[in-house]
Length: 272
Image (cartoon, rainbow, N blue to C red; front, side, top):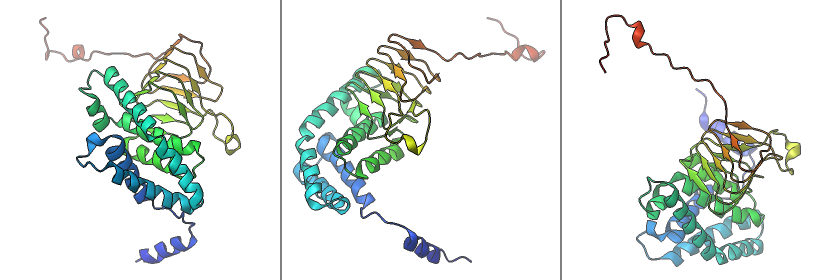
């Protein structure tokens, strides 16, 4: 029988290990969201203590990637912007409440909506991304991806009033630009038309202007693709070219409905 411990030892010896604690970082992220930004999720009244925990974990892990001074500068800047970030996230939670007739309160949105959770993690990870923090932004975004099935790259730029309905299966690429008051449904992909390493520093993902609605299963690809403001992209549409403002894009498909009841002789009789 193969000795699994020998295999594990060999893998460890051959692997390059990042000097960070992923489990600790994910716990710190959850602490920030559920006990600092949204204290309605926590009965304890020790926000300062919880914020200090987040700060200390992030400083230690970023210090291992950069240096102590750089890590402290990043965290100091992030923490100083937390009040503004918190206000923005509460405003975005209210957008969900106003858009979804099933939502009974803003608190319900904060506590239960997977799309909103992914959006919160995106806002946090984007702040670190903009400060050129290595690894951490992507680690946070992939944590949200694994939890709720929404993949938003921290490099994407998303305006205010953003709303994700249901969420599962959504993919938003690194160079995507999204304007204000955009609504997207489950299964939407905002991706690259070509996937090659040579395009790493190019704009590979689409631009979505203000007040656009993108329905379930739609795929919009390409860095030169622009969806004009106030447009509607229908479900399952496949779009690789720009559309002007106020467009309605639909994917034509033929649906045939065949009634099999008539083929069952002597069994079913309708009296309507």
